[in-house]
Length: 421
Image 1 (cartoon, one colour):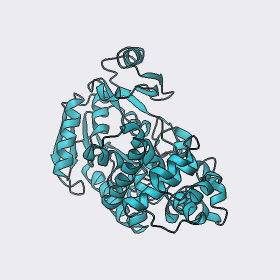
Image 2 (cartoon, rainbow, N blue to C red):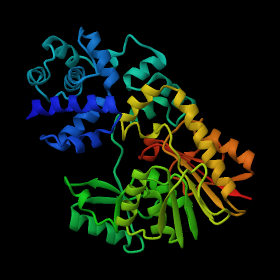
Image 3 (cartoon, rainbow, N blue to C red):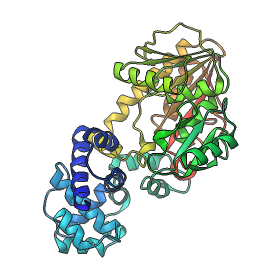
């Protein structure tokens, strides 16, 4: 079974690279007959370290293919087990992956730092933490708290798991008791967000059994948006899919109406299903372009703008993002910045005086965050308010908020609160 898991992982990662799908989606579609938890953990570990593993293989004398096809990924799987899974017998690793015993031994006797000792500067960090060089440079520009390497290290580990609960139906104590007694999920309260719980222990399959009208698995950074939103009567969500932020606002703010705009028919269908399962009946999902939203002018008192981004805050949670950013290169920044600025401008022109606008992303670049907010705020006459409550640190523009994984214990992200005056 162990050999099969390694070979299946190589096939999964080959498909992830070719199609740029998520590991989870590929596993769900292919339904391999191996333990899902073991397969997922193995594939995530390899993908978080794929550049380091490839570099280590070459330094130890490997001359075969790396990546591109299942055979090339199988070599990386073997390298990962030799380097990081010290409890696994090397003989089993070489049998399962056909990696040369001498190369496997070389990796087992090395440390990650030793394998990159021939490199320096940003190039060393890019290989050691398996990120495109341009991504390391962009993250360095943000001057993260505790230093760049502390941030990069955080991307090598899974982020903590968080669950929000419906405060309209359960108190925090009732939610924690129900999770513990009925689902076997041990939690503790978030120190800032009053309807969010950190998962401490969870049994396999327990999360899938959660009553969706009461609980929803959502990252802490994503859950912050509904708290920044506060109270509202009419809400527009311009880049609405998958719909979890709008559903959370429906739970907390209890507005009269929420309209989500989604350009993709498939994602709109998925969003309708998600918000219905959460009992957020007041949400209407309409097909449309967020840059030209088919909505009434000056009708909303809250507009949420959460556009596509480079997702650099999710490099630990979704390491597949590394392959996407490697393939697109830094040119993707210019395309996304244009979309983000146009989306925020569309919200500003849709708003009436007194309307609040939330701009949020799950990325960390200055280009996609502070630069977008400053340019649009100046051009459209928006005032930047303080985006409270804070679970992160103040951004490079006063009042905005940045979440770093190693500081906020969640995926990285950014949020700004603006006012149309």
